[in-house]
Image 1 (spheres, rainbow, N blue to C red):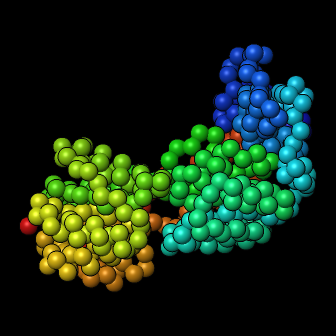
Image 2: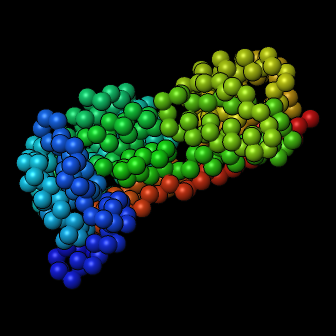
Length: 367
């Protein structure tokens, strides 16, 4: 759909049914709350009854917006006397061939390989990637990074970070360009990509249940991680679906040291026959703690991890785990970016890729 031909006016009805979420009765009533202070792109979006990404497309004179929708946005801009931010004004009206990538958090195997897959897919599509990496995520640094990339005329900006705060900050930035985030939790109004962490955790738990285990504990990742929250939710729901009681999970920090500390505690609980560990790194520490305590894996305790890092096949014993296709995730991110740039209102979420169960020697039927 484009807005260059008056005949495409009929497509406005279709557009109203997708991401802009416009009521059948038309744009919002005139009594919409007036913005406090300087109006932003989000105020314009609310007034016009569209997404802020659509406002961005109108401001940058891009295709993919119906003529009637463009008119509503232009009217809202005039009514609010909105002036684009310096970042938005810096955006050229022609292709730059540049995509911005922000990788925030520890350079763990998963995010790093997703970034590599994204870079390869971007090159294949004829784009250059300008990448910003930050070990710790804070609102100020993330906002500055987004604006720096936009000032470089990035056509879209991607965030790879498992921390919930990053997506929350991104949602509130008036960047003037489409934003895409890796987010395993639902984020209304955001273009998002992820693997289905919830279903992966369900499958991991059901593997243990299928082996006859009933007392299955979970070593979760940090509370601020969206992936950790989804894996915890999948474990708990799978347990309840089979009439089992999910006991209070133990919380680690993704690192082997936390898995070791929590493994020492679990080794003292003879009632536990299986454990679903939130990632493979923590599984390393847990297996080491079991060996020290004389707990045999899998004879006394079955252990399943998550990610399938390259070393998982060489643990002692080799680790049963859920394999994530991180390179495929990177390609999904770039495919979503291309969809957004071609026709933002119809760009789909790519969130249905489910991790694959890889059975090795660390799980066995309950003795």
